[in-house]
Length: 431
Image (cartoon, rainbow, N blue to C red; front, side, top):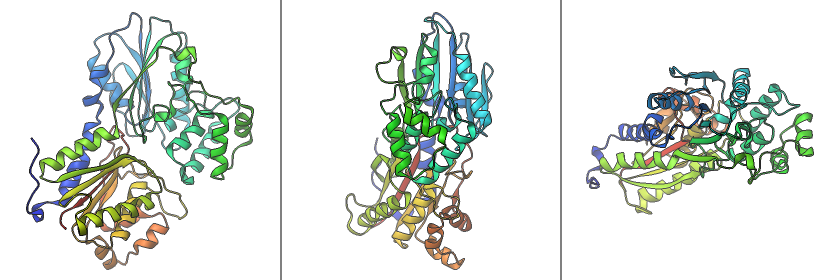
């Protein structure tokens, strides 16, 4: 039953409500909750479990708890995101820049699926972060080459789809290559989506699905952002030797993909919390992209329209959105797309009364920081001024983390063991 809209918005504890919505979004995407309905029937042959991503270990643990038959496998997750498993080996590696542990895990996964037959089933568990964690450089490339390119892509302002297009064409495991290595075994891929649009090609760079993009597309992206490319990588792309597995390839025939958790699912869980509190939720979109600071400025305009004119929905309400913004790093700060969004929102709102916000990454890590995001109140800029903080300077230096930490307004969750991308909630309590 939907709660009635509250008549006295002053009774709302904005900080608590926003955090409850964020926690609900994360809980909705927990593997223990969303994975069991998608488990397959036992195969005639072996069950091999493989996977990569920030949720991979939690997904593997859930499989073990609900699977009575024999299985074996290996998954790779981010440092600090491992959980105990008895039959599936869990390896921790670096993210967002890959390391030797992730590269070794990728090679071991390829070895594990070698020599399977038609009676066998490969259960592939993928979630956000898999692109960096599942790193197997294409022939002629080194791990150092991949690390350099990853760092450049992360700072460039490229979208996640653009970054993953490049990654797929410089890999020995992404872009359908892992599924091809499993042939003739059947492959069932369970996905927790962290990408706008939930395209399986972009989740962990699509190791088990065909890729319609070409080497030429990857080259155009690199040239567009002015990214220096190691000579071996450019040769791989210009020669076409880095081409991925394409739609219609018989080695991928019979493969099945299931989306078990998405950003939309998380937003709907947050919306339910708002309704229970008597606040009307308004979901603006689950796949919003663009420069984080630009999105923040636009969202401030929408929030002000609600606060001043009651449009497109009257207050009290909460504006919810997801997706993945980008940060083009030009300053010396630590980046973080959610806190950069929030700081740009704060600057544009300029202390607008009755407007509060929380922005965070559902994996618990905004950029490379062990901080999920931050929260904003109408008095945030006033408190910052009292501390001598200059928000525009912090924004120009890509140092929103430093700004919100100084205020004591960071949101810290620890490893959440899932990832359905950015979460943004703007609470407008009055007109």
